[in-house]
Image 1 (cartoon, rainbow, N blue to C red):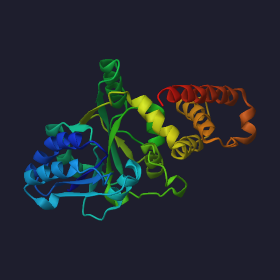
Image 2 (cartoon, rainbow, N blue to C red):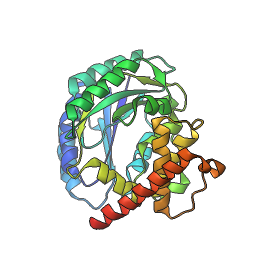
Image 3 (cartoon, rainbow, N blue to C red):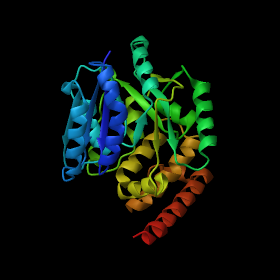
Length: 309
């Protein structure tokens, strides 16, 4: 059983160095069972060269470390390249440059991957986030949700519907995974990962496990503001993602579909395009309320980000 860790990084060489401190010992210990593939999404940052030289010196088997630099195309598209890369790996897992691996748990998890049934196309586990308000409450809530649904299989949409916006680590079975291209958003530098998983796992083929293997920290200026700014600048990807959530099943009053509808309107306003997705259904009171909320958030965005310059 061979596993590949996939990492994209942009303007954060010091975080890549920190991640290496947990990855390299695993690579050396599990010689041949684990490799690491890195894409530096910025070919102008020379600071990465020094860091990568240091990492390379610590790896015993040089064939288990692969990296390259290219012009910034955004994490989503860079990760596509890593997912599409030909290899003999059985499983692929994206570990971000600001993540840290809990080594003894990760190693134990790898040993059990060979026993996972063939009808499981992906495994999804919770990823803990530090440096957020109400940290302990949110961690306990996440663990409770994952415990409730552990060892169950569901689609990615069902996962989001039942568990919500919790950060996760996803192990992908290489032989069953495909990368879909989205020509309409090729110029966007920021695309939500949900777009990838909604299309990749529309059926009950993701296994839910309550095993914490990685944790991370949010950025100092706040992940929500950072994400919202990037969604505004890359509204095509954002609109497409929320549209796919809305198209997945008949609209009802579930939290995920209400949220998706509000944000569909919100970022459609940012695109300055006419909203005609729901045709006559826009006349209902629910759609009108969501439309108003979307408009309010759009105006709020304009005020907040104008102040920030």
